[in-house]
Image 1 (cartoon, rainbow, N blue to C red):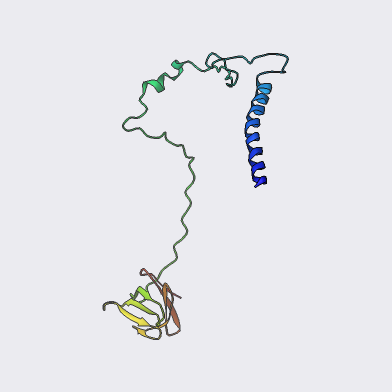
Image 2: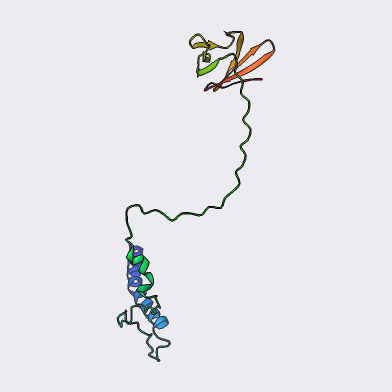
Length: 172
């Protein structure tokens, strides 16, 4: 309890002493060269003669007539746009060649179901409608080898092919 009281009294004394010492130090540094010589800083017409106020040096600003174009035009008007940005022209980069995509007998992979049960793939087999296939099933003359997250691997007579989602297919 005594420590708390001593701490509170110390904080109160510091709260009273610091502003007084700080103000005296500020005046000594910024307003007076030494306590014996009473020199005051030059005062601008815009600021009042107050010892605690900071002085602002007078700045040479251009006359308002220098801004006549900006004054005559309204700041906000219909059709106002940002100034055009000049972009240096760069030569066009040739696009990389597109990887050749082959069809696999018109088959299209429409969807895949994967979970705790065996994965199944929804494959469209023209001219028939789409049907669900699992690993080992036959699609036309192709056998479904594996079903991935976004693809189905097919094989036939030593050939293999991959059906990708969104209708693309590649023969390996």
